[in-house]
Length: 116
Image 1 (cartoon, rainbow, N blue to C red):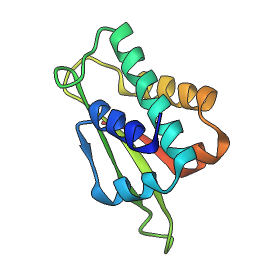
Image 2: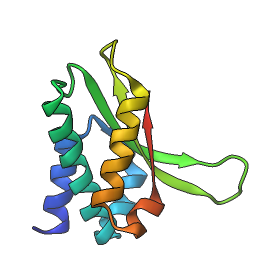
Image 3: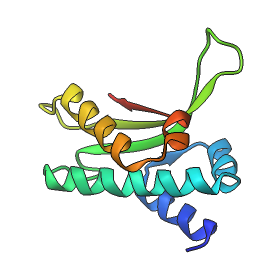
Image 4: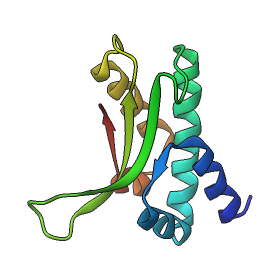
């Protein structure tokens, strides 16, 4: 699968993506591949627990900038819950565990996972 095809698949798996991230991911094929695998696993996990995108949750990819440390920024994968009653902390813990298991260290260093 080409980088373009991988990126098109990512577009299907998210509700919103920052245009700067598009450019960044196209020039970082290892991170692009890792993010794609992670997003696919997020969707799989959410289906297993009975949650569907656009009905129960949204996924956004953007750039998180550390205001306190000049020049520090990370890819941010944000899961926005639309459904009340879902334990955000349990979900975050599950996503972090999943990321640790499937993502290479280089990709893990580049991302922040947020559940709100």
